[in-house]
Length: 136
Image (cartoon, rainbow, N blue to C red; front, top):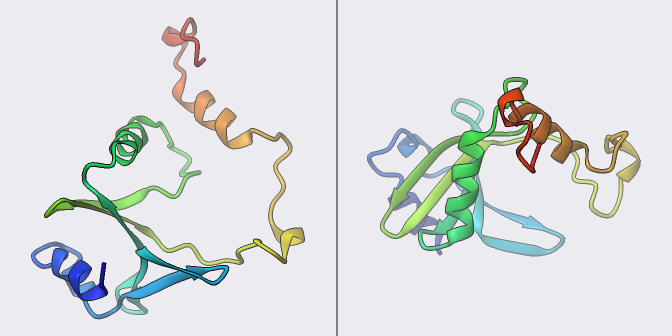
């Protein structure tokens, strides 16, 4: 989808001021057509992910994210979700940092346990009343 088409989806939303600030995101020489950096120094920087409304995995993921107890703000949560004209726009804060894809791997934090993130989610979302739950 072209940038101007995505920008039209923001008209009338709280993200309308971001129109004109879109940049496509590329990683390892692949230019994404559904992932954009939006914003500037005045507005702040965000990432906008564009998905088809009928992508069941996206809808399931959004529903599950809404259930997670993340009071320590460990995960980068979404700032906004817009459903328009057959699309879902998912907006999150832009994270600054180094992408350790091919280099700089030595500066990436190394968790003590291989499944630290999953364990964190389970620990935060399993209540004593659900101790018999197979996920807890």
